[in-house]
Length: 509
Image (cartoon, rainbow, N blue to C red; front, side):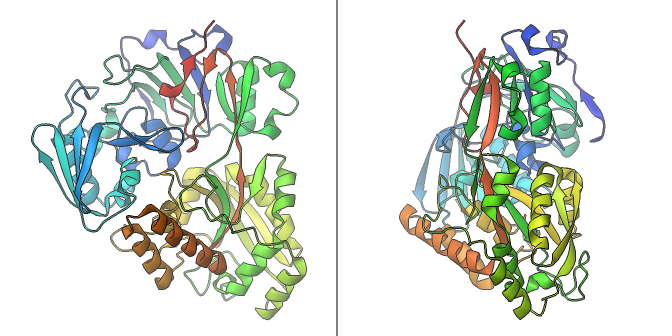
């Protein structure tokens, strides 16, 4: 079913735009060109951020974040913590599912228990700390934790509430959330159309009809703007070059990105499949240090032609846990060659670098830089589904990807990417290199127990220092996100880089 086009006719379908030039579109409709992909309508399967960016329009969590990543009420209008292990949430009485059913505590209980029972659901790791969940009266939910967790609310942001009794087949066939928009049409390869939920419990969105054009690269985004196919596009400064005269009616936004681009490698096997050596070179910390020193981040950023910042750690400065004293490793080819000599690899080696298609250009630049120290790289770019399937089955030796702490907390990257994968699926969900360090694991787990924000921040920063020495993967740069928006609309970019249609307004005439 996933590979088919899903069309959900409703009475207003005839009013939807067919991606015609935006100058002809009604002012209450918008076409958005974005790199998002949607693999499933089941919101509990949406572990990738691009999936969640779409699903968030249909489904909602107990709490949400604003554009600055501050916690705000959503389906829970208020909450309290009687003790460090107990959270009581009081539900919004006006919230209703798209089917018309009123939100009940049992829906929240069912949503969390469904995630806990099914290890195949991507969102499961977010509720790993939950010991028990139960209804308290007609409008409240009590959640008991196994241990105190300072970032519990941050994790709940990505736990969508679904109706009690929903199964995978029903969720895959039709959305039924409490969100501000309803699904009209989904073509997995091309677009998602949605229409405003006129019975939404909260503030009604300004835009009645929204179309997301999926899988659009920055260059394609600019093409969509120039052709009038879209009104808002995720693009890049480089892609916009030379088009300014044709884009006079668009406002350009440059906003710091939450995503760090990084290099990862296989750290689990003595022999790795896409390398010319019989022994896996990435298991040697000297080799990892050499790669880090061989990369000239400033040259890399300059060659990309984008506004970006070299990275010394996996989080930008607006994320809780950022370490202000850490700076990028200096570019030093002589030192890099010396380290490879010490590792017994003075002659270098050959390796395949698997890259997401959206990161092909930086992959090719990395290829050129590593050649200067004898590491001969073959670049193979892949679409996201194939790329992540390959990493999930450990069918890669060297790869380039990106990661963002969208909860606003550095524990995201430490728990998901650095901590050893565990059998319960609580940690290491995106630790594709299978890095394992018991000392770092214990420090990560202990940091999550801290309830004093300043103590926990320092704990996260100390872990960042250790991770920088170990180099389980190599942070490269933070690129500013560039957006172009028709001046007929108003909007403020978010720190998590999500485009949420309900936050787009219509400019006064």
